[in-house]
Image (tube, rainbow, N blue to C red; front, side):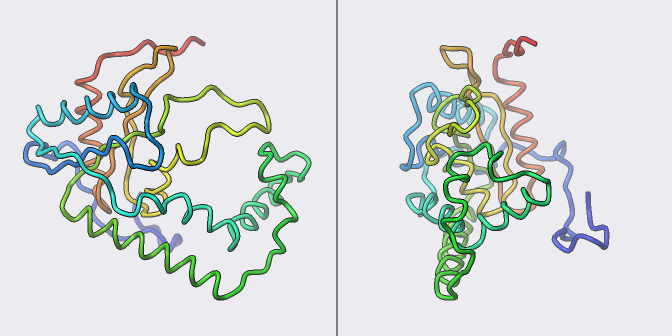
Length: 232
C-alpha cells in the first residue's frame, strides 16, 4: 500500500480515488473474442452485455482485439524453459513439498526433463519477444481507457481432481496477457451458465489506473442482476 523503503518493485505513484472517476466519456474497447480461444455463446453474451451497460453509462464503446493475441500462449509457455520451472520448484522445495506430492501432473512429468541451464541466446530471444509484445499492447491501449473481455473462454470450471488439468491453457489467454503487461485488472460476475456456474467479465485499464478498473467494476456490479450465493 505504497512505498515502504523495502520492496524495490513498489513505485511512488499516486493512487486516485475510484469514487472520483467520471465514467461518461471514457474510451472503452470490448474484446469478446481474442481469436485464440473462442468463448462459448454464454460467455460472449456476458461480455457484450457488459459493454452495452457501459455504453448506456456514457462510455464511448467500440469492439476490438488486442494485437499479437496469437502469440500470448507461446510467449507465456516460453518462459518455462528459461527459468520459470526452476523458480517454481525452488518455491515448492522451500515450502517442503516433495516431487511425488506435486498436484500438477504436467509439472511432475517435466521435473527432471529440463537440465536447469539456460542458453544466452534462448533467454535473450524470449525476453525480446516478451518486450515486443508489451510494447505493441501499450501502443494499442494508448487509444483507450478501459478494456472489457472474458476471464476465461468458458464459465468457471468445476474443481479438477488432483493431478488433472483444469482447462486447456489457451482458455486462460484472456488473463495470461495481462500477467505479461502487469496492468490492473479485475473481475465481476457477468452472468450464470445453464448449469449454475459463474461467468466472469474482466475489466482492464492502463498502468496505475486501478481507479478506473474499480469504478467500472462497481458500475457493472450495480447494473447486473443479483445472483444466488453458493451453497455452503
